[in-house]
Every structure is written in structure tokens, then in C-alpha cells.
Image 1 (cartoon, rainbow, N blue to C red):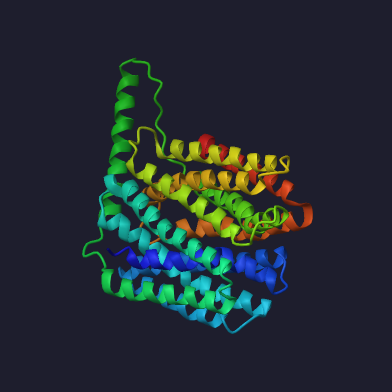
Image 2: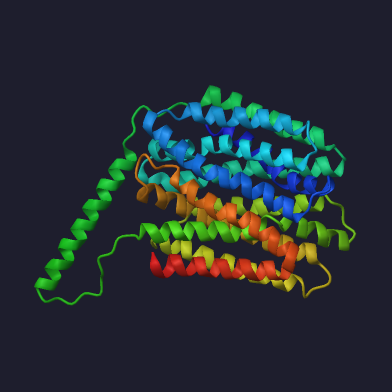
Length: 398
């Protein structure tokens, strides 16, 4: 039940994620401004992520930062209703982003400390799938708001009310864990397993027994670099994507609300991915599972180029690819979150969000810039190459 507040919060931000770029265009902005607003917000969120992760582990209090995140989002979204200035919007969104990140590291720690290591992937998958359901409902609300001309101020107020409900639900349902030790135990177990494997291999070598096994730890630096490039590729592709879907919908004489419908399908694909990640038997290593999901996303990014070659059914083809993109994204996030809780020490819980934020901040500006300057065809090519490079990092260097 403690996840209910996060579910409501994701409803609000699911609605906002598509409404905001469309709103920027309607008040005279461009793809450049969409990239600027998003990238500035993500850049200022990078140090904030590290700070919130450090402070929540330092104080061993997590609920207070979750409440701060949801309450500040409520206030900022209410202030959005009073401005149509692009400059002020950049500032408000950046400030909201700083406090919005306050709930991310505490959420990850809550899951890793309330459940044993054997349940991490299943629990992360359930959390992400459950909150993705909130995101999906938020997109559906956006679809209805657009279809019935709900108005910008009322849409911002709806996002505001949903975050206020998230604050109230979390105040009632979230509790701090009484003991904080699971991540420490996992690190001890990994060290003992590594030492045991080393002794086992050394014994076989001394006895003259040939072996193809190697003694190798996960490369933490490669893991971090892979996260950055995965987030970069994702942000490059998805930041201007609502405008791309809007453009091809207009060419096919479809209503603006179809953009929300396309992202509802994308979110549905992600929910299926979370369900699969949490229920399948994990027989391969974490890095192998991540690499497989990333290469699948690479192929999908290159498939977007084919949309340009098909005059009809552009929205339908894009929507199908978005569904598969959501599915692959879910797999990567669940596997990466579980692995990060093993590799990232206590006190640095915000590092996962920092790495994701670095890639996201750069990509959110680069993506719209490429689309605005060189066109969407080159955007899809660039995203595909970035995903391919990410695959190489996870598969070869980690």
C-alpha cells in the first residue's frame, strides 16, 4: 500500500510529460525551447540526485524526503497556471526538478531494505509496473483533456491535485524501515563469493586441471558509462517524439489527442515488460540481460527510419514501435536498478539517478536540436547508433 502515493504522483507526471511539450508549441515555443526546458531541469537535478541520496542514507530517514518531493511538485505545478512566459517556465520547471528528485533515492533504498536480495528484481519490477499504471492513467487523462479541450490552466491544476493526493497518501502510508542492513549483507556476500571462486580456480590450476572460467568482478565504471549512454540515447529519441507524432498525425488529419493515445500504448508495453522482468526465471547474468534489452531497443530505433519510407499508417507504425520501446525500456530499468543496489555502496544511493540524469540532460537538448536542425530522419539514426554503442559497453567492457 505504501506505493499508492507514487502511483498518484506518476499519474500527474504522465499527464504532464506529453502536455508540456505540446503546450510550449502552442504558446509560441519551438523544439529548441522544449529541449532547453528539459535539459536545464535535468542538469540541475544531477547534483540534487546525489545530495538527496546522500542525505537520506546519512540521516536514515526516507519518508520526509518523499513528502518534500510531492509537496514541492504540487506547489510548482500550481504556479505553472500563472505563467505563459517561456523564460519563467524554464525557471519553474528547473526548481521543480530539483525537489522532484528527492523521492527517487529514498524509494530505491526502501525497496532494497524492505525486501531481501532474492526479491529485488521482482519487487522493483512490481513497483515500476504499478507506477507505470499510474503514468498510463495520466496519459489517458491527457487524452481526454485534449479531446474535450480542457484548457491549459485546468490541465496544470489536475496535475497539481494528483501530486497533492500523492503527498497525503504517502504521509499516511509510508514508513521508514526499522533496520538498515540488507545492502551491506549483499556486499559482504558478493565479496565472499568472489573470494570462494578465486580459491576454487586457484586450486584447479595448482592441480593441473584446465578451466575456461575466469575471475572477474563487474566493472562499475563501465556500468555507470552504460547507464549514461542508455539514458542519452533514450532522451535523444523521446524528448522530441511527441512533436514527431503530432506532425504525422496532422498529415493524416488525425486529432492532437492521438499523441496521448500513442504514449498510452508505449506505457502499456512498459507494463508488460515490468511484469515479464519480475516473473521470469533469471538464468543469465545481470549485464547479459541488460545488453539483450539494449540491442532490441537499438533495432527499434533504426526501424523508426522506415516510418519515413511509408506514406500511410505513419502513426500506426510509430505507435507499434513505441509499444516495443516501452517493453525494452522496462527490462533495462529493472535489471539496472537491481544491479545498481549491489554495486553502489550505501551513502551513494543517488548515484544511479545522477548517471541517468547526466545522459538525460544532454540528450534532452541534443535530441530536439538534431530534429530541429537536421530533421527526424537523422535523429533516429543518431539514437540508433547511441543505443548500439551502449550495447557494446554493457556486453564487452562491463
